[in-house]
Length: 325
Ligand code: UDP
Ligand code: MG
Image 1 (cartoon, helix red, strand yellow):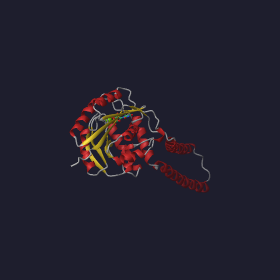
Image 2 (spheres, protein in one colour):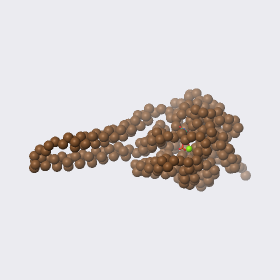
Image 3 (cartoon, helix red, strand yellow):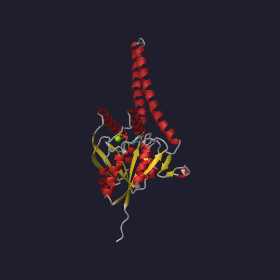
């Protein structure tokens, strides 16, 4: 009987300043791959412009084990962009996205593969617990999911990071979306397909520092909302209508009152309050409109999402940039 060709699974790891964990990651992934001989594996390490020895370590790992590939971006583009770069270069029949810091246990991958073989396209890992994260981070993340969900019609998965296995057709779907301000977590939902949830305990970082700060998180949250819904714009109109109706009723009241009781002593304070309040609302919604306009501006430039310095031994010379996907 002819032996069936093994399926290839790509493990995609975006990494930014992760020199402290890469060796640990190597050990865990190597064990995993050696224990699952039914599949071929490719580990695609994406170096997102790290300032430490991350790239050198990736090169060493590749020398030790050719299943490890690496992609070096020309600078730090952020995790969202590092992920799409990795998807563009991944060859697998399925791609597993996993953080470099081992917060997502690689040992979950065989279970993901099992569900993939059963026909699921997107097997995502949902956190049961979040060790090593502050109370404030958990709370803000919970509130954020609530707000985002209230704004959008597509279902965003709660407590789910980017740790998931994607079938090739999901990967192709994600690759076809070339937005520059990406909110991948939303895109996973947006593309649809058969989803399966796996529960897991999220470990604390194995070593090194988190790359997120509140500034970055706030930006990502705003991208999340503005890339998936124009509801805030509609709110502007609704609040405008509401204020106009109230203003109109108040105007009728003043007219009738003036006819009956004559002109009042003009109220300075009340006028100021109304002007300031309405001025504030107008500025807020100018800001909201500006957010969307800014997005349109950025997307309208149609810049490539990233540049590649090198892919394994090959130096990228940008010759094919214009006819790349
Ligand atoms: N990361 C990246 N580019 C960045 C920031 C982060 O590729 O600009 C990677 C990082 O190396 C890690 C993953 O994204 O593999 C998640 O980052 P981190 O662990 O710092 O975030 P947290 O788990 O604290 O949310
Ligand atoms: Mg982490």
